[in-house]
Image (cartoon, rainbow, N blue to C red):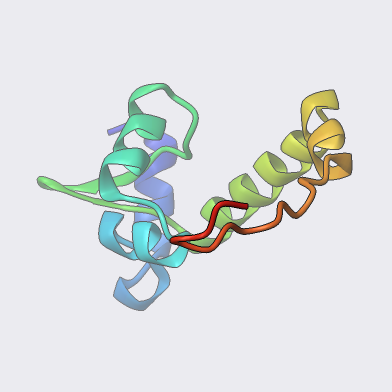
Amino acid sequence: MAKSDCATAENANAADVWELDDIAKKYRVSVRTVQRWIQRGQFPRPIRMGRNRFWIPKQVIAWMERRGEEAQATPAAQNLANFIIPDRPRRRRGTNQ
């Protein structure tokens, strides 16, 4: 455990941390998605206590906000926001329209 992780762990109590399941539920993604973010180094580092991993909510929230801002800043996201799918008329079953 890195020195900075130890200092953070000492200041955090059980009510001030999130587990992997909490993060997945909060952001409506699968646990596997959060694990991929962690593996890719795209997610805040956890606090390790034995085999358990915990995250400080402020760090996760700040990461999600930065991620959202980055997504909005990309040209693809801006183009997608302007893209409107036109309504297409529905065909009824049994008719030859």
